[in-house]
Image (cartoon, rainbow, N blue to C red; front, side):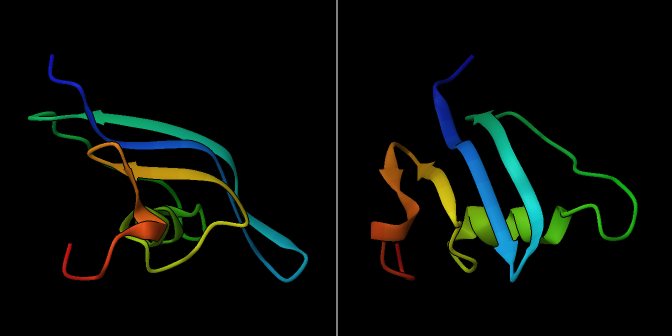
Amino acid sequence: MSPDVIEARELTVRAGRKTLLDAVDLAVAGGEIVALFGANGAGKSTLLGALAGDRPPDSGTVRLDGHHVAALTPRA
């Protein structure tokens, strides 16, 4: 299997006092297909937003091809 292309470690996102994601770990290798499913309000959109860099995490890291997403430009 290819090295991880997307990696999230201890990803936590909050909105005020509410925790939307709590210490999520995720690794997706190149060529791997992943599906997210769950009930409304489970955090699927929040996770995707954090992985894309649209929603900064309160703690934890997101890497894309080994680079911190927060350090990438939108074009990258």
